Image (cartoon, rainbow, N blue to C red; front, side, top):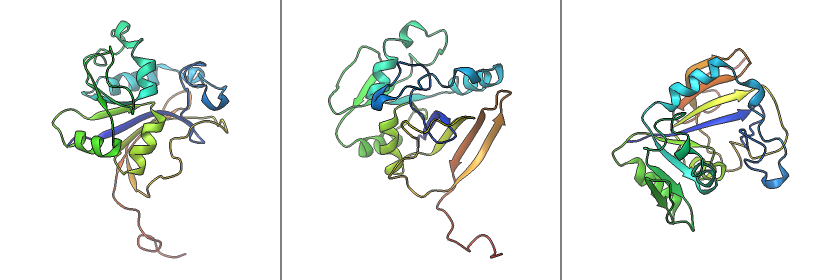
Length: 203
């Protein structure tokens, strides 16, 4: 069974909106786009490169696909696997695109993604795609979160864990702090959360 792995740049207060640049996503009047830039360092770059070079297909929301489709076909030297990967694009209106190979997922997104997970193939990596992630979380379809947690708060913007998040326990399988203070951590599913008093004695 394929895993759905959400990979995100995230602030301490949970914001994932427009990490890469000022024009990436200005919806809701967001003005802090590009907030990851001051924290780049070779350690973070090496960790990103290692993650991006793993076998994967992409599961993307429509907006992320629209941002990536004009860019990555001309920058495959930066991310060799991105153009060959199958792009599963969730959209209620879009049925085709020039960036291939792409398959467009319409209708009941949660049901369709659950079906894709049961197909043969590499794990499904989700980058960006804030609205899609909310659907995946709500329907308990995320197996793993690979997060880069930055030492800043923004107070506004789209958040990774919004209303509708399922109660779920996770375990840390990888963690490192970069020289510029970014915590890179991998969380894998660890079942249901324990009820109060089941795991820890009362003080």
